[in-house]
Image (cartoon, rainbow over all chains, first blue to last red; front, side, top):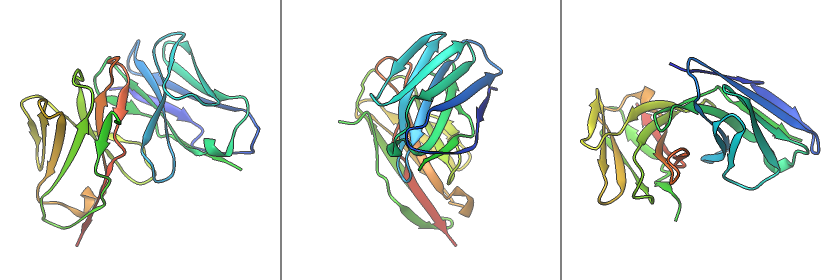
Length: 111
Length: 110
């Protein structure tokens, strides 16, 4: 099965600072990759998904961006963080529409 | 209308009880359906896929009703360890994006 590596596990960043979260996948090739955000006490919100290198679909307009420079690498970025960017960020990988495997998540607090 | 809707609960049930969750979806063309379990402050993990004919895994039974566009999860003989949030997942219009419901919270009490 797939293994999703996501880091860091916890991050505290000041408002206005940049962000870069990285996710790498093992155990599969050419997966669909996803970034989700879960605010405290809320559901999972799909932010971006990618079906291949350089192909990014944005589900929700915001000050975040995503990139997929390699087949099994997915990066979530921001140039300037907002307080509302705080949340639990999860990277997931799936082959076509089969089950998704998740990384352990990054808990981001913007202060 | 949101793509995937669930009753948020919480459902508080005693050990040994049977509990059922429903989930409705808006896209009639959706082909893939799943139930995930999420423990507090952890990543979601697959509980079971949902097949057209319905499927069972031990104490858990999942069913799909395409005509009414809902899926269900039945948990029999609830255990304390079943306490978690249960997420309904449906693939999107594009077929690639997996959309999660907001989850149903279950608390099993002694």
